[in-house]
Length: 396
Image 1 (tube, rainbow, N blue to C red):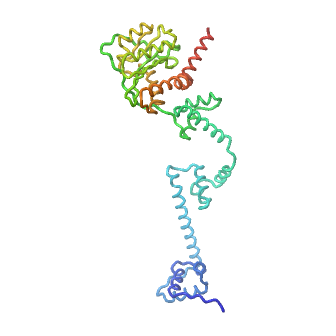
Image 2 (image 1 turned 45 degrees about the vertical axis):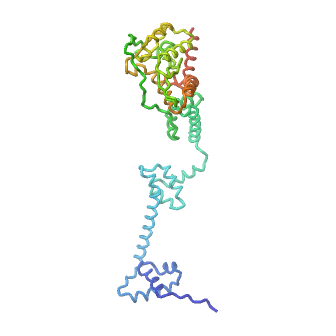
Image 3 (image 1 turned 180 degrees about the vertical axis):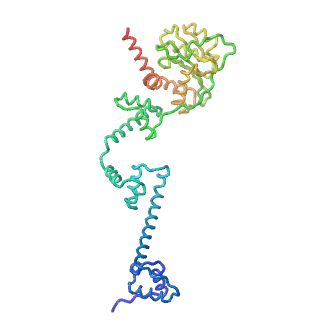
């Protein structure tokens, strides 16, 4: 017994006929889409046209070709719009760099035609295929070199506790034997978001002028570095915040080597903290400080009778800058900026004892012995003093 003949409802026949009549598509196309015979669909179309009062004219072969071309263009434009929408985030800042365009094409080639994408992004197809071929090859020597330098820069940056910028990292790399420019280091740091720490524009007021100060001249006039050790020492007091309240630190620094020679902590702004730091600096220099200039601001601790007596006892000459002119004591102010920015402000200290231990360790092990100073040719104060002493001994 033969297969049962398929039947179609009048409504289905009418709708199928209008797929041809209303859209202008061929009977062959529509028949293939809906799964009926071409002759059968042709009869449905003829019957439906005879029922219509004003049926549309049949499309001739040229009109049909033009319609198909327009359909293809619409489909292409729709695809173009979808593709450009996906790459819009990259294009919004202007013209796309070739390598970024090639990355977009590579990511979308399974969905869109490569030829169309290179036209839309205004890059060459040969350039894309050359780029794609390089992706599977071994890294170029320059790329491998950049990758190696980036690793070394990250190691140097981590070793500085995340503090050093391009100049000091450059010095680290050159000391390790690398031949490299500062611009290259800075460029690689920017590309990999490696940043040094910059000081914040903040300065606490610690200078409290003594109303009854005796006359002390400015023997330095901002010439802190006289080319030899123990010629000029600079000093100042700063505030350190802790969980137990303010802690005060006084430091004495050599103007030539930038080394911190003596320092002392106190929980009050008494002259004792200055005298203690000064005496420790003199002891560190084996007591030979005859003629050394001890320079500070006009705070009451530095212009007091107590410090004047200590200066005579230690054979040092007192010197002070002008009131409210921080540049007259700029070298020690620079040290406070470094201490706060690179160390103290990055930590919290619950007690005075905890802060004293941490700051003392940083001064001795990091600042004096490890931190590179641009004014010293990117070496530490201890290394600079050793080099200076060696040169003096050789000259003798």
